[in-house]
Length: 292
Image 1 (cartoon, rainbow, N blue to C red):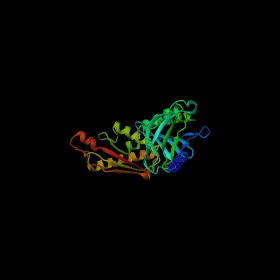
Image 2 (image 1 turned 90 degrees about the horizontal axis):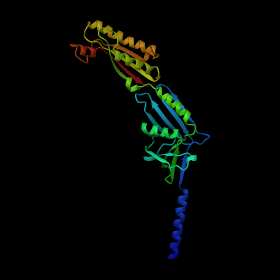
Image 3 (image 1 turned 180 degrees about the vertical axis):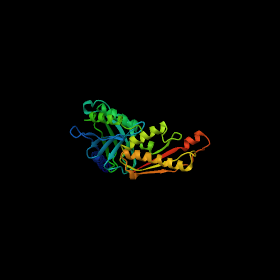
Image 4 (image 1 turned 135 degrees about the vertical axis):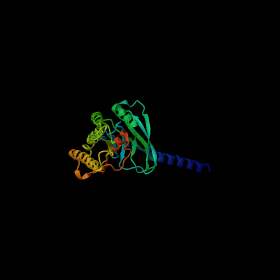
């Protein structure tokens, strides 16, 4: 009986040693020779800083045109998660500072069949760690092999020059997004085809955006008047206003076939015509823009 227990104990120990030997931390990271950073988009609408992680995917920092020009981070995986999980993100010191401990930054949700994403605050923190020479590294359980864990490092080697180009690109982004200009109501001065000052500023914003976005699918321009001046005169005036805006957009390089301009005169009032405030609202032009 004692001999049997001894053999069982030895067998269990042997099994544990074998299982422990099979467990591994699979690591993915660029080294000194293949660490590349590149700014791949440098328009006034989007800036993107890419870093290839060999045999794994890409680390992508992105900023889009908007008031705040916020950043996002995307861990683009060639093989996406099979399950829902959490990846821990740490700032790991470089080898020449190996005595320093790794610092926890945050946790990143791993969603089934999706790349990993992090928000503005964490993206900036990652960039600041990279600037100091540290390596932001993700740790998670391998969804294909329960015995293994994965470590995915973002290398700071060759980072700074590309980072500076990325910051300059971000600084030049437009301070408004497509959502800010996709639906616009503009108003005209009384008895005139001259836009109000605020509407002229908005039209200039739209012009800047159109000059930088080649994916515009259609622009719909609809012009209205108040009830003063006579129905037919107002109809003609609204058509001229709509056409003038269309001609302006075509002069910016927009395909004329993508721009529809309609004047409806006194139709569809949005307020009373009995006072100046109501008439100001009725003298309007609406621009609706759609993307591909």
